[in-house]
Amino acid sequence: MAALNLARLIAAAANTIAAHAEELTALDQAIGDGDHGLNMKRGFEAVRAEAEAFSVKPLPDALKAIGTKLVMTVGGASGPLFGTLFLALGKEISAAPDRANLTAAFGKAIGAVAARGKSQIGQKTMLDVLQPVHDALLQGRTAPEIADIADAAAEATVPMKALRGRASFLGDRSIGHMDAGARSTALLVRTIVETLEGQP
Image (tube, rainbow, N blue to C red; front, side, top):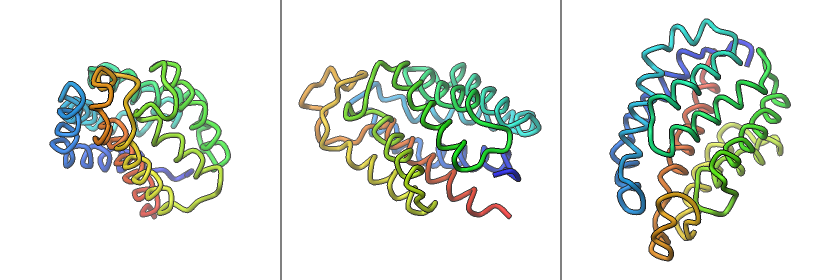
């Protein structure tokens, strides 16, 4: 982690969100506002535009700057939630984190997202991906295993009934659809772990 190439990580994340923007929008059209894909793409493109400036900062400051940019540019409910994840991670992580520090910081960041969204596990939100990923980190799982766990966790939101966000207004009609925020979280997790694995 000490030799983290943040600019490469930002580019990979922005590319992934752009490539899946239509899929995320379609998921959100089924049970939400229908703007998740476009909002996330706009936010990550804004982060990409400042990747060089972010990448020269110490990691905690860079993550906080990314979080602030996401809050300002993503919009909707996702901006504050994804922004809070990065802001809280930046507050807790060290400049050269080892796995233990990363895992602890990630756990605190998940708590901050839950508090911001007044939500918990099992309510068909991004938390339903974040928590299994944290559990996998605690268990010492490998990067490919963590990516697969994130994908499976997003898939597991399909049979859930939404209890938070716009989808909760649909009640039982929200069952049978994947949560867009869970899917975008899983996409980002896979991109981040695969990019980190591929770094020299």
